[in-house]
Length: 332
Image (tube, rainbow, N blue to C red; front, side):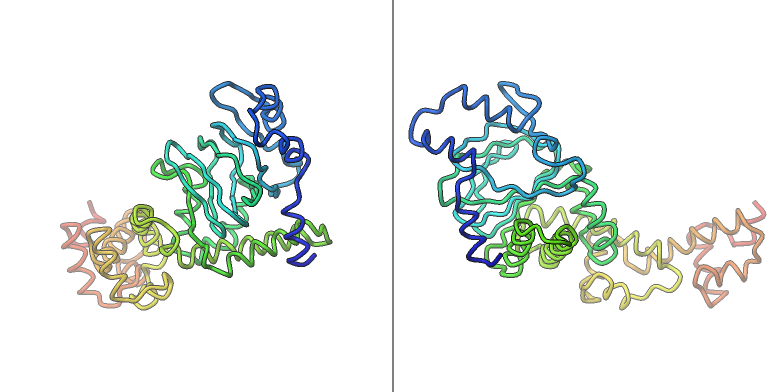
């Protein structure tokens, strides 16, 4: 399949759209509305309904792709899966948790599970792709491929798992990013071609897609969301210090987070309220306390173990933070 064939396929009306198209300019029949809800959901209520992955995905699937149905107004509903919407052409208007949102051509919306939202009726030229994703897929993508390399992967993981209450969706304004668009097109062509190795290829392209989104996230997210991302940096930095306190350097830390050394120094001071040197010292002394209490290691070995080379300097640092010398601390 090439781009032209994909474009033709996406523009075609599916079975539901054919059924609804004749009613597009007339009053919507209540019975038809209920029938559509039952097509997507096992639980239908007047005020809220839940779209179930079992209705749209095979049990063995962790990811599935569906073209968004046009000519239908989706009343307020939730999903029991994660959804990534990519707008191929036109625009899609939604109301998410009471906030009106317009997703333009080339943009991506990532929705957490159980987020309440409604979608206005899409016209013939408003074509969007819904990527339905079970949590297991994100476990694979983030934990094995991105988590060790990207500063804000934790932000994304927390967003999709609903650990943070301040955000339940992420709107990536990527209309001018050709890479994002090309990755999505490759995903769609793989999905519709159904060739051997399709699932492996789709996983790889989605990994590349998220890597691109994370790389320049400040370009695509609102200033409010960016500030909340920056607030999570403290967790990432503390985690890095806890893992590398023995031989940590400002240069190595800056390279790990892809930041300028001066910038990351200022960022740490701003977000945590302490300098990097102070944080490293605290971690080393805490580890020294643990070793003095729980092992029989000679003090000189403890000093070497936590990354100090100057014995007298360590003694001064330890007494300054703990209030006693290492020997007194162990005896107590």
